[in-house]
Length: 252
Image (tube, rainbow, N blue to C red):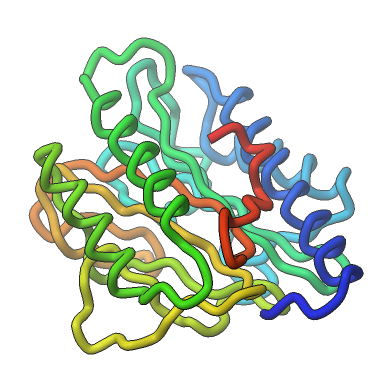
C-alpha cells in the first residue's frame, strides 16, 4: 500500500506493533521441552490480546497462527504437538497479522539456549545484512540493486541466498505489489521503491541451498541442498531518506 494520510500511517503502526510485540514475546517465551504448538498457542493468545488476527490463517487457511520452523526447516513450519524444542535449535518464527484493516509482517531466527551447533554466525550475518539493506532503501532505488547488495554481502561472509523466497509489499493485505523483493539481482526486475509505500524486507541467508522446496505437508519448506537458513524481516515505510521501521519493537 501507499501511505496517503496520517490515519493510514497510524493504522500501519498499530498493526506493526502487534506483530512486533508478538514476535518478541514468542522469541523470549520459547524454551527447551516446549512444543511448537505450545509456542504457537502463546503467540495466538498474544495477538488476540492486542486485537490482531493471524494473517496466514486468514489469508491461506494455514494450520496455525504463526509459522515456526526448526533447524533444517527453512520457513512455513506448521506448529505441532510432535515437534519438541531442544537446546541449541535454530528456530525461525514468522508473525504476520491483520488489525483494523491493516496488515503487517515480521520474522526472526535465533538459537534456543546455548549455541552448541554454531548457528550464531549465520544469524548475525542475516541480521546485519537486513539492516544494511534497509539503510539503502529510499524512493527511486531499484529493487534489484537491494537484492544485489543482499547477495553480495552474503557471499562476502561465506553464505548463499534463497532465490525463490522474497520480500513483498504489504499493508491492505498480506502480499501486495511489489510482489517480489528478491535477495539477489534480478536483472529483469526494473521496479523501483516508491516513496510512502509499505514493504516487508526479508533476508533468506543459507549455508548450502539456493532454493526452498515444499514438503509433502504442503507448507513446510526446506533447502534443495540441505543446510540451514536464517530469516529476519521488518515491515518498513519507504521515504526520501531513512525508512521508517514499523516493526522496530521486535528488537531485531
